[in-house]
Length: 126
Image 1 (cartoon, rainbow, N blue to C red):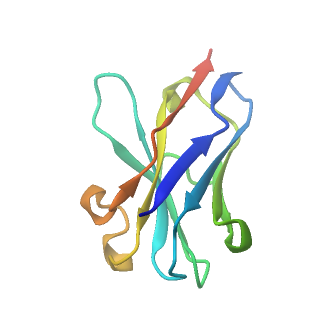
Image 2 (cartoon, rainbow, N blue to C red; image 1 turned 30 degrees about the horizontal axis):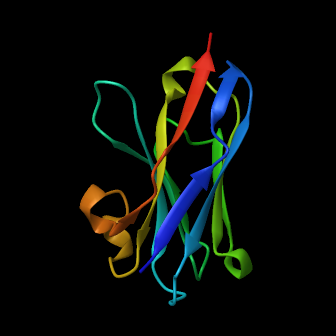
Image 3 (spheres, one colour; image 1 turned 180 degrees about the vertical axis):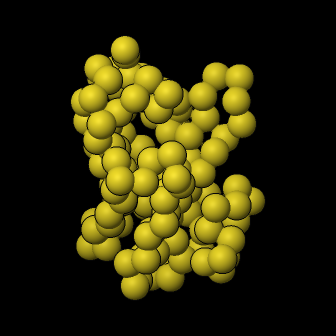
C-alpha cells in the first residue's frame, strides 16, 4: 500500500516562494508518475504539475508555467513542488498523487491517480 505525505505549506505574501514536499512510502515500482493538484474553496480540484519517476518528463498547467517547478528524488521517494512568484489566486489546498499504472497522455486527469496525500494548505496574502 502506497502512502503519500505532503508538507511545506503555509502562509506567504504575494511574490514569495514555498516548496512543498511529498514522500511516497511503500512504492515498489520505478514506473508511473506523480502529480500535484490543488483545490480552492468552492472550486473543483485542478491539475497543477506532474513528473515521471523514470525519464524525468514534466508537465505544467498554464496557470503555473514559469513559476512552479516539480522535481523528484528517487532515492528518497520524494517529489517537490517549488512555487515562486506566488499570487493570491494560488491559495488552495495542495495535494500530491501517484499514478502507478496510467499512461502519460492522461497525466492531467484526476482519475488517473490511484493514491492521494492528505493535502497541505497554501495561503498567499495580497
